[in-house]
Image (cartoon, rainbow, N blue to C red; front, side, top):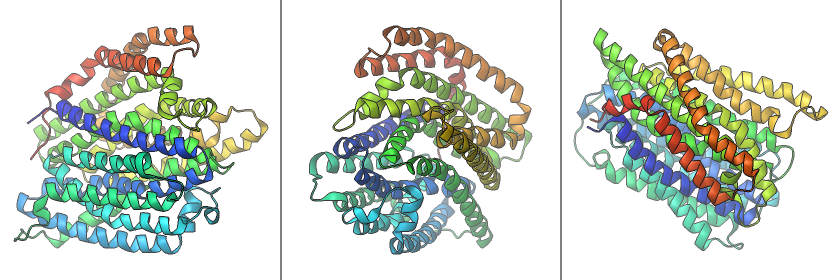
Length: 506
């Protein structure tokens, strides 16, 4: 078996391709439409399948299905996956029908300033996008099954194929006459291809043949944890959408700028942190089964190693992003009708968002540990409290902002995104006895990593300050890559335990 670090690096490489294609998708969209009402409507269509992929993969499957599959005997896994897949398909088919009947409800939540009556053929395009929901559900079930088996590459390749189809459409086929309807058709095709890849890799799920039954009690427990997991991931995913909607209420195009900044924040988290969490969840789930002192000690060691590595990587990425935000934003988004003012605004937002990246890493690893222990309710409670506190601060700052006592990038919606990650990280860590017991050593390790990273990044910061914005976007991005590599080498001692740890393939 490969090490956790090697497996994570492999998944990260594939994830990076998928994320870059996702950025290509956003780039093509922004270049052709700019920050306009039509672009806002297109983002709503793209958000719909993305929303429920996240709800399923980061929520129900992480909280219930993957841990349950690791606990179940191998013959029983197929039967369990089939039943969860059927239930999930039916539920999301009904949800798709409901959303299609009243699309304005969801649109008002995602983009309150968007008037869908002014967007040609939006209703039909929204219907096609909603139809993908049960297909996304099946792809998610098959992907979770593959992850539980230790086959991490295929689900990530599914993401690559999804974004590639949309990029090909936007770059080669899309035209003004096709409008949003053409984009919706492309979304359906992309989801079908992704589902097909998952089912081909997990042929046993659709092949005829007897499978071992799973007890009804297990089914009820799994479905309860599944529902709680979906609720918790729903809160996590909804948080930035809520703050995006509040920010966008001020006018057309602001949703697009906030969305692009959020995509820049999600790039390092998706490439660097998500693969590690993906690999560690089955590993921690397998270790959580052991009912012995040795097993619990191994679980504790794996958790501490993972959280130190994740926070170290996230801190390095955050420091690099703060220093090189402007050239990175320009490289990604200054195309077509996007202006320098637009990308500078995106960069300012990203600098604030990125503060939450180390806390996001901590809360995701802690969430994986809690889900592995069968405690998804704790994750859901942490998310609910964090969202309430972040919204409260958002409301408080909204009273201050009209008096122009705060810069635009420090208004409530922007700070709310960061506070949500901080509070959730603290609550998740407090809920883990291991984290409380190892708080001192973990804090010391993280503090040392931060100090080393600050020293290593200082020359790059001085260089950017000396040229005062005169470094081009390609040169700046190249320097950002060198800086990140330097920080990883500087803090490689934080990653070494993950190199020795074996991934939990079965």
